[in-house]
Picture 1 (cartoon, rainbow, N blue to C red):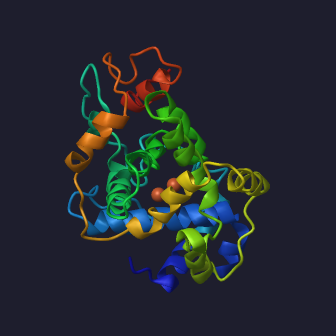
Picture 2 (cartoon, helix red, strand yellow; picture 1 turned 90 degrees about the vertical axis):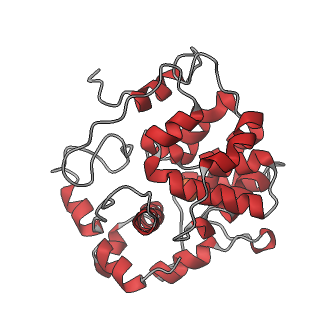
Length: 273
Ligand SMILES: [Fe+2]
Ligand SMILES: [Fe+2]
């Protein structure tokens, strides 16, 4: 999708504000900006969409705001009060979560999965693309790791690996495998990225891993997925979900898995304790 560099930079608070942000934060800001544009451009996106804050505002307001930026999208409203959430079925499926809790990322991950399918990826990678950012309903900081943990009991090891490490790999070019995301970062920010040490260390580890290609394929099908007016539907992936996502019969959140509480937290984010 087309990005207005000037508008994006000024929405961040300009060059001075940009200097105060870590590269991870800049990348997240860009992703958030693109998701917002996407949701605004598609008919089934959330009405209005979130307001994009400036970096200067973020820095100045850390100690004045009641919540932190890494909090999940369900837990804080970007503008005004949060809304009452629709009730979920007693034995909720992945599809119920998509329809009733993952709306903020649904368009983006559906587009990613759609592109992965067009590009002939394996079904395990198409599923990874379909799930890769959805945990942001629960928490945004380190979403690759959180997302992999949330889905690990229900997907193959390869799918979980791909989800976990896409977050680190997005900073590193790999033209041989068709990844040019960092070019966009450079165009947007005019800087060479120096990811935080834990991201760099993770990249070095994954780069040598025999499964390197799987998270790489998620990043390859990630960026270009931000296309306005492309609205793939979840039903198109029902077969892949059925074959590769082990839906617990008790429902997600009620199967006593080690991550059941994470699903329940997405179901009931209004519970006070
Ligand atoms: Fe992501
Ligand atoms: Fe993404």
